[in-house]
Image (cartoon, rainbow, N blue to C red; front, side):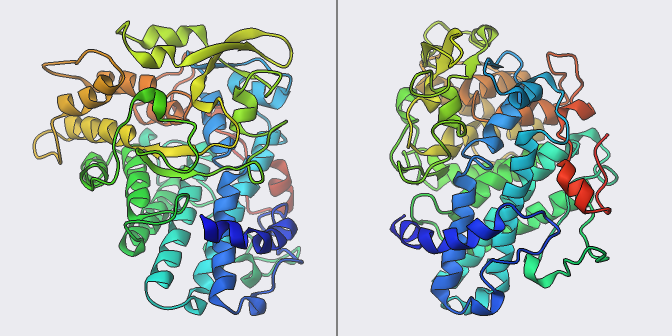
Length: 458
């Protein structure tokens, strides 16, 4: 991460002028393309993509908290004073909602950074450096498109991916587009199927290029395989998901630790496959933005996100330490409640993908795929995760619902519940079916106003 810190100052010059621009508008004060001349220039821009993932519009908050607010059922309660966040939990989000207004341009800023890097890749020093930079850019872009498509488009699982609208697939940097008011090439929305095809292509290409090891906070081949396993699970490609998860597990590069030691690290912990680093100088926010801000009780944080008391009902073993990985506090408005210890400390790494998820993915995917699965037996995989949490083994057989429940116990408050309910076509507790239009966000109104080719969600 030393390189990222070194180049972050240059990137901020690039980001400051571009991060608030509309998707279809060419930023006027960004670093001109003809001034991106050296390998160092391109790598500085790449590191900006990681910084955007770190921000509140990315994994620093929105990519994790927004899906959890939509899938708040028996998981979290928003007790704060920001109505736009409560609206996400109540499924009453409108096109001017602040989460929508931050998440969309933030993700597309990552896409534009990745596109710029890919456009200038021949400037990068040849050999391993160029391969890694190219692979990292593809990883960033594929991941950003995955989260955009999932939150702003209907789920792949509803069977209409070829007609449902996803998001615009912008595959070139903004400086190559005509940004005039009446330009005919303002981006339209691609279908969900087209979006997933691009996501898979980006991550597969990244896998072919990325190194096995990299600085903490930067993508590796296993980061891309783990992310692709998520994509494949959403698509119902269980054989593919099992293969990707098995490759990560079998690498031997990661290991489960005691559950209480799996979070709040400086740098990566042993089971972190990809994470977003934070420091006191570089973080997603400490007052009105950021996961930790919302999850840490007052007076250190805001304490706006508390554990729903019904969450404890999912646990089936009194010895399961995950049920007690909590503490008490109160919100900034004085409401007392329980808080997860996963996000209890400022300036620590946000784990985006952990090894425990790979065991649960491989086990469920093999169970669904039937004979010929990749890796260990599903019972062994689910019990690997349970044993390290102190819960009794399941068996001699397990069901898909066992894996759905185990994912909830293991991955609660990490953004997983939204994706799991949707891909399994399960009804949300609020009564909405998995493909109800209320369970996706509307496109930002400012984008609709600026681009006549964009169609709003109903």
